[in-house]
Image (cartoon, rainbow over all chains, first blue to last red; front, side):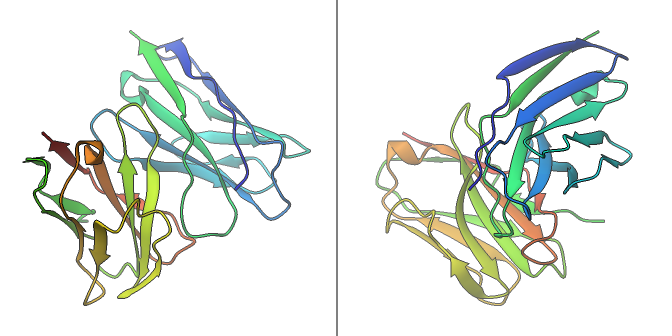
Length: 109
Length: 113
């Protein structure tokens, strides 16, 4: 499984954009980049995924570097409800998800 | 619509007791996964079902752990002779197919005393 590196924690202010980085230098050409988040006392929830091109959905945007060795999850206007642990996962077609330690995001009011 | 549900939400067991954790996946989801999450850690894969077939059980930590999904819907994770190191949150997830987005339940928090 391709390894990911994320900062342990990040902090931001409410209504400001948040950029969560992830390094995945051993990614292969067919591996998808997935992001899940886990709110306190809940199971993880899907946020977004992509292969090569940048992706947008109602929750967030995913910016993927041209060499695919890194990516950034972008929350355009953070709210208090976005405080969670964010996991960057490289999915190699296998069914299981391999979670790392993730980034604990704190949002200040 | 209804999401993945798990029961019980909390379970306290004495060391040596057997426990059974239940997962009700989203209706129509073929794939079902179990994960174990220790305090402060990310979830770790335990096992995977496609319908009633257990296709991957490589993550089960010992032969005390057993999972089944006899009719391809509800699944039960059983832990025999619980140990303190089994204390964790057990998460269930389901997906339409193995490679599709996984939808997680709220988890069962197991505390072994």
